[in-house]
Image 1 (spheres, rainbow, N blue to C red):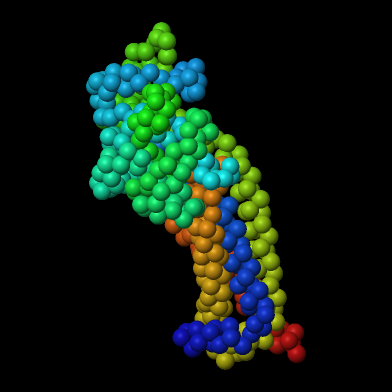
Image 2 (image 1 turned 90 degrees about the vertical axis):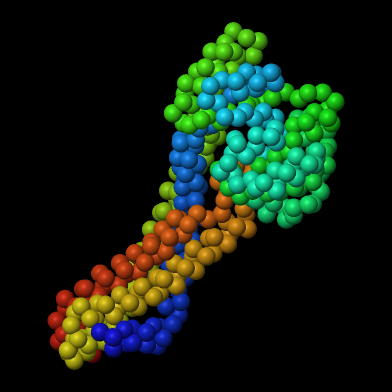
Length: 382
């Protein structure tokens, strides 16, 4: 058995090197396409799954978000049973040095930032600097990577909603949560620049647990029913689904086209492997003649296929991860879809798919060759 493994290694070196390289490249391309097309549906499903268990609620004006909510609502919501924290959020819609450089930028209450979004990973030092600097901002890692920003750097954003252009100092960053691309800064800084209190576009409410979220949502809406600004309270999942639904159709189309391309590449690999093994029927016949069993011969050829598939799979997944890292945060229209880099399950799935292609490319042709009588194989070769 071990002698045949050595033979498999030697065969990879002395065989048709051009065909070997092309086979590895075909597997790498198939793996690359697989990883890229699976990212969007995987991340949207993961965000929805995480939000499903979230104890957060989103409160907006029932008429439309642009009408806003009175600031006084936050105090009334805070006093409700099982409400842990409330954060008032105002959309700033900032642009950085070029109209193309847009991203999510919001004004928030710094005091409850960690309580509302603990999964974002805000450290105590970042929160302390945010409280200490009135123009401080906490920026998601994807946006930091997109523009090459550093902590302590000063940046200037022009609002597309308010008639202000504000300077900020980046006091910290975060990489957790469903969307590590948001630019967050203090609401009182925006109010000071406008010389007036800003409207509250939405309020984020963190409940004691997800079981009481529906009850609190109903209580909030009933409290402000028939008021000048009636509320509509949704769970975080329901709120995010309205944004993610536009990606689902796009993701399904891209996924279908990508998987068709993967299937075509896999067929090309299978065809190339079949041609290679057809040319090596003489080797198989000789190995059977000198006493090697069919299992040993199959293991040898499978080893060769797995070696090529592993190289191609690792090359393809590495390239896909590098591409997503380079464009991380660079497509704001896709929101959080390209903000987290390549998920590890997709990388593992890509390598597993490459190994499956390698196994199929060796298994079927080798079994066909082993079923052929030795004398017939030798006669066909000669």
